[in-house]
Figure 1 (cartoon, rainbow, N blue to C red):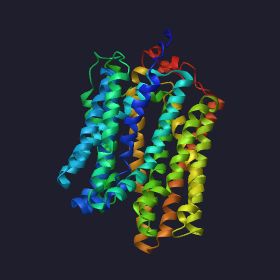
Figure 2: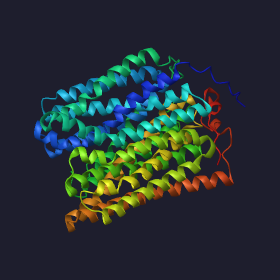
Figure 3: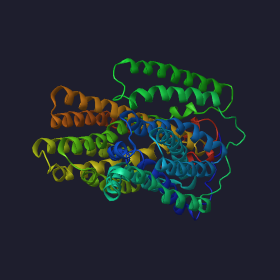
Length: 499
């Protein structure tokens, strides 16, 4: 039996280093939603067609998702500090290039590079948290990360609305990208000084390039019809889904073969022998499929159906963003005590809040809807905060630190795929009713009901996991199932929450 080593002495600057990671995470996640309200400005100021607008939004999500797992594995092998700083520098430069783009084609190219850079940064953040923090401190750090995830996603429309309102429609879209520059430069300079220089755990391991190609092609084939669902008419696009399943199945076989041969795989399939990781990843994928669609749907409805400006539309979701921050901070403190129960409560709160918004659309249509939906969005935001950060903590808690980057990449890839799939499904419901009946209120309610249905699936998974933990708790040393080296930071730093 392997001997579990004591954790290293904590870095005195770890909380400041966490601030650097969170600043980079904030701007990369902000860019998933801030551009949505700038699309009319892009059309007017740059002459961007609908196809270009679609790729500005979906291309970022696509390359973001493609880069996550390879970048996480690269950080595990060569050092997360270096991978983080390279990704952050590339993201900042790409943001500048997006803002200076002379034409629609150039903007799409720079936006794809920006998404790739964001995918490089994201898995290093979760990996660095697992390296810098242990026990209850790790749960608290993931709680702060959950706050940033919730706030950045929800605050995007508000930030975009404020910028366009201040600068004007013609050039407002440029400042949606320029806003990243001061944060990116400051985070990079601080990162050079504050991020810890941990030695690379597996610097001599071979990088699984063929695995990268298989996984990248599979994720690309799966996400492309999802992100382009509204822009590509007809059903032919869905032929890519079985192609994706074949590629991902081939990736699974290849990775298993790599493990049997004693070579380093891109993703350690032993991770999926941990129930905490597998169930947590499924819950995350499903929840993001329902959660992120709400902002997409609500912005469309308020601006096109009710007549709100971009700024007013952004202000309407402010209760959700603020409550999500509070809920995530509380979740980071409470997850050690309550475990999966907290995720169940959070998912229930999100579903209840969205049902409340549905009721507000029915009972208070028109310009007063923003006020009527404030309380339900507040409830949903608290629920979201109690879901994202505790679930991240519980999902990664037994993952060995030397696999933390790849595991974080898998988790966040699921989030990106879930977001794309949710927007495709819920958007189809909304637009289909709108095209057939022309009633925006009913279309909005049906779209929200679809989102609630997706979140209920995540709730069922969380309840099933909770019941399984009560009947048959996962072994304390389950991290030993994930290859070798559990003593390199796997079980020793785990949060052991109650059932």
